[in-house]
Amino acid sequence: MDAGSMIGFVETHLRNSLKAEELPLARYHAYKAINTMEKSRTQFEDCGCDYAKKHIFESLDNLKLATRVNSLEGTRILVRRALNGALAGEEALELHDELHDSPYDSDVLAMNTGEQPARVTFGDDPDAARKIEQQIDESLQAYRESLADVVSGVPCREALEFVRRIYDHCERQLLREDLTRAKRYYNYRTKELTEDALRKLEGCPENTAR
Image (cartoon, rainbow, N blue to C red):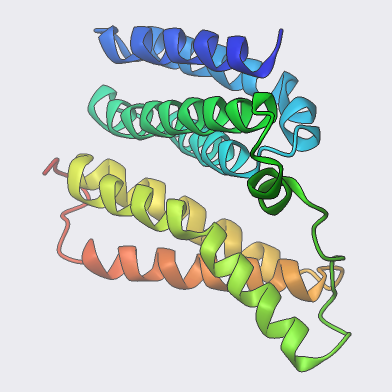
């Protein structure tokens, strides 16, 4: 299955998930989409279509969050965001293919698919560390937006349980001594974003729904 066909298959399952009237069926189609995306991960890693890859992986992150929400309403919010990401990825992939097929856009193609600079590590220099931190912060933008959707659109008690679960996971990860500095920063920033969501849910009665 090529990347374009994979996205089409994923979109079908996401639309079926949104149509589902029962949570188990919505989750079933979400899991089918996740499995398809995971099996095609290497195709996107190797294709050079960076923008398509960015949207698809953000879509995958939203789907994984969707399977951890315990209400149909909350699942639909994240599946809808995942569908938007898949559609954006499809458009980016089509643009990428058009550039490859063009006999006269070699300069544009070179800018979009040329060799990327070598990866750097935290230990290289302070500028490299800041660049990596910036990349991590940018990668967490989709998580920030999805978390905001959960806080505003999922029943209060369920949102609180969901956010606390992520927060507790980050705390456990930060206690590990084998984390790289990049992974430690990733968990630290995720914990900060999640802590902000927890503050927004402070007035939520744990024994009632919003």
